[in-house]
Amino acid sequence: MAVSETVAATPPAATPTPPAPSRRRRGRNAAYWLYLLPGAVLFLLVIGAPLVGTLYLSLTKWSGVGDPRWVGLDNYQQLLQDDVFWASFRNTVWMLVAMVVVPTVLGLLLAAVLFDVIGRRFKPRTAAALRAAFYLPQVLPVVVAGIVWGWILRPDGAFNSLLDAVGLGALRHDWLGDPGTALPAVMAVMIWVQIGYPVVVFMAALQRVDPELYEAAEVDGANWLHRFRAITLPQIRPETFVVALTCTIAALKVFGPIFALTRGGPDNATNVPSYFAYYTFFKKLQVGYGSAISTVLTLIIVVVAGVFIWMQARSERRDRGF
Amino acid sequence: MAVTLTPSTAPVTPARLVRDRHHRGVSRWVVLALVILGALVMLVPFAFMLLNAFKSPGDYSSGGPLSWPTEFYTKGLRTYWTEVNFPLKFWNSAVIAGSVAVLGVAVSLLNAYALGIGRVRGRLWIVGLFLLANMLPQEALIYPLYYVAKEVGLYNTRLAVIIIFTVIQSAFGTYLLASVMGTFPRSLLEAAALDGAGKWTVLWRVVFPNLRPTLAVLLIFFFIWTWNEFLIPLVMLIDNQTQTIPVALASLQGDRLMDAPTTNAGALISLVPAILFFLIFQRTLARGITAGAEK
Figure 1 (tube, rainbow over the protein chains, first blue to last red):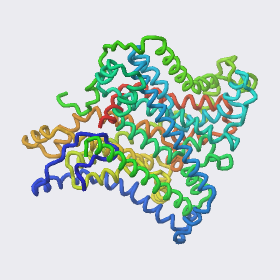
Figure 2 (cartoon, rainbow over the protein chains, first blue to last red):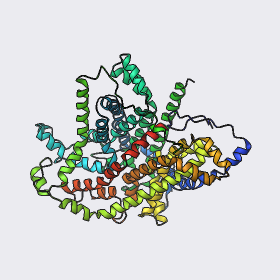
Figure 3 (tube, rainbow over the protein chains, first blue to last red):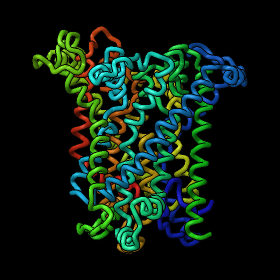
Figure 4 (cartoon, chains in turn red, cyan):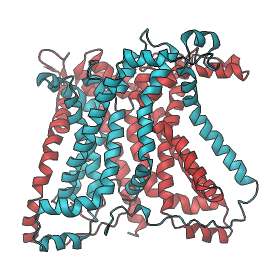
């Protein structure tokens, strides 16, 4: 076990390497295990055992009543030929665009502009108020957001009326009901939901950047874009990692908004693995098959998170020069 | 306080403004206008919601979603309030989120004490394992949890949801607090040990008071996150007596009761607690996000 390795997603913290534990020290530390007991028991009951249970069920056929029937890897074989399964993962890629790529890039720009231009040229209150406006969607239950947007995008909803009002009535559309526009519409909603998170985290991160760096750069005649690339981006890289990782996991797991907006429809155009698994479990009562979907999704998330953390650790090591 | 473990406030931006020759002209106003425009776009759905929450169904069908309400109609709000039994749903949400916040912080604190201060062997692997609870798709747990809850009589109880989210949230808490405690000043611990304080006393008399700001932030995070959770409450709470606000609202969707004004009224009432909570604790949260990002 590498003690000096920083923990997952931790920006370069000054974790002092503890002295090699002497025999006495180790004995003293053993008493601390007691404090881990409640957490460990709960973890095993609520996370460990169910996870193993799902893994086992994924190798069976079961409707939820009676005894599960062992079928080995049949469910996984069936998954490979299931168009809905593949469609759900294709949609996940689009959710990654809407929940990770766009919010992170826009969030970086917005945070930099709010901090560096608005916060410094106008009153800090202006920047704070604008930040709050971008953050607001993050506060409300995502299902509530989904329901409101579902109504806005309905054929008789506010968005179509807005189009009418500005003379673009020809563009009226059943945005969520048409397989061609449902996914882009859901993506737009997700961008709206997600954008505030990176803005707030990046603005907080910028607070710890030494203002003298910016001042020195300005004296040297660096323009805003220069400063953004040379100071802002490298300085808040640890936070960028954290945001990208947490948003990626959220995008892979997304469920509530899909449930509230489209329930995966029309014609699976917005189906995602989470909703597909839920539907298979509780509507189709195919517990074994649902478990296989969840297991695959779990594996993907663990691998993606692992790669992220590994990349982060590598870039941190490079920064420290070894 | 002698030792603060949230170094967030250390490099505060100085109030003095730097004289900048690049941003004194018109361009900064253009930038401001663009950002304000973006902020307004963010707020438009809220404006739609407000506008339509106070319309009568007749008003809505004749004037459409954009028209100004002809009367101040509150029956939609009242219908939602009584039909859904909103006070009960609010109570359910508050009990679940509040219990999870307190229990989750307690479990995180104990875990992190062993990992961050105790530095038990293999702690990095243990933190990683705990973190799994936070990363896993909840679908990977839900069916066994649902099945076992039915078997042991916890199905459709708030307790089941409380236990599950205590574990899920404390995974994140353990991770954050363990890394905060990893940098806890050793001298304080040693001084306490010299005074003859046992581990339990050190935890409550030395570590806990120092971590209070971080714990407060965690408490708020856990509360809001649990309040907004959907899948597990949706599966576990099927009853009008036990459902939380998001589940109640979603299960009304498509119901004949939910004409457009009632939908908006329901959404409006449902988000008021979240917004109030956010406004009250905004400062604590802003500090906490910094603390979290710093660690």
